[in-house]
View 1 (cartoon, rainbow, N blue to C red):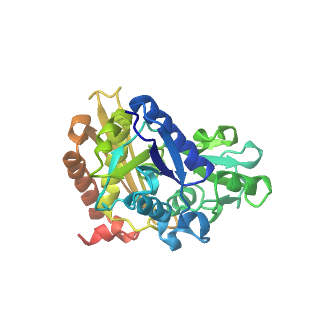
View 2: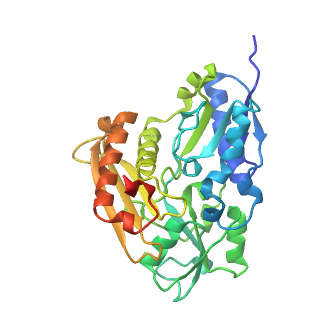
View 3: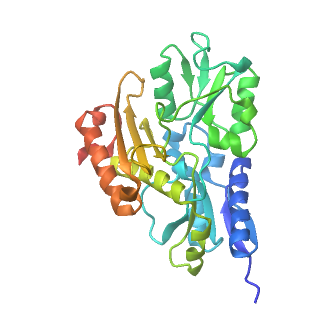
Amino acid sequence: MTLPALRLGTRASLLATTQSGTVADALRAATGREVELVRIMTDGDVLTGPLAQLGGTGVFVAALRDALLRGECDLVVHSMKDLPTAAVPGLAIGAVPPRAPVRDALCARDGLTLDALPHGAVVGSGSPRRVAQLLSARPDLDVRGIRGNVDTRLRKVDDGEYDAVVLAEAGLTRIGRTDRITDVFDASRWPTSAGQGALAVEVRSDDPFAADLAAISDADAEITALLERAVLRRLEAGCAAPVGIAARLDADASDADAVTLVAEVYALDGARSVRVERSLPRAAVAADGGREDAAAEVVAELLGRGAGELADLVGSGR
């Protein structure tokens, strides 16, 4: 018997459909089933204004989740960094496919790097974390908010409205815009958003198909992205909180299969920050319980060193 096609819910942007198309291809190869994309419009696609004022990156997620819960699709694909950390009854992350590059990238006029930008250069970013990091590295910059898809933001550089914009290297890679990158920032020194570069495939937790998703999940991506999310969840950072969290696997470390975790909380103006770095055995953070324990220790150290005084961290009230 031929099984019906799987309906994969996705935002309609070029980046979202490209990401979802990659997941669809992996599902076809792993399960033999046809997969069709179901394009869903989200509030984040139609509302204007700073994301922090609209409710954060979660505005891109709610419509997809509602469609999944109503049975209009069988699974949805999110950029992991857009996915709120609070659990939703009836839904579960069924797979974390192989992760794309996690770094932030500068796309500037005339091939300029961050250090080479002129004094007072106008740099666009809609992320409070990136704003704080930019000002920490270059307090002289004029960092301004920006919205729109990747090509819209790049066009603002081409038109001279901005000297540069900061975007995720992952998104630029997925849609073939890496030629626009003029500088990249080392994630160990410039930690990115939790889950950046990773995708989350979400399903109804009672759907028998959920078990099949394990075939397209990547163990390395799961460990790093879910560890980052555990720290963010424990911090309970507000959507406007400048928080960078990055985990990387260190196969060449003296303790093979170690995971290095960096978490940094910034003041909005970038003038101060609190940073914690830990090396953890991979086996210790391979499951949810170990990730939660590690996150609790890291967050306790961040808060003990005053991170709650720098940013809107609900978790500072623990």
